[in-house]
Length: 95
Image: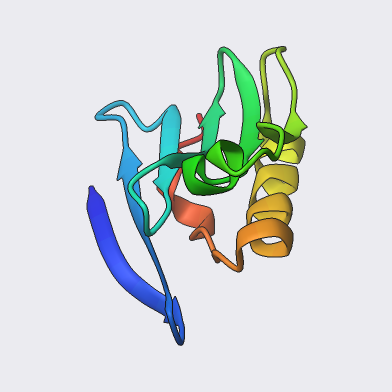
């Protein structure tokens, strides 16, 4: 699944989901990866590459441990808080 849509005025993003439904990538308007959720590798919520090139740090909320449903909800919350991106709840598959 790939999604590119405006979320709020002036903000758009891309959403890619792995074929097996275990990993989600979120891309900012500048094309940079601003978020990744992986059942195996955890959560990464980053600043845009544009912000990083201007001197900001990379990580806003990152973990490096396997992730489950609670971490999925945390990822969704962090993406909304930091980037105003409402990641759909149903894009990750759970057994």
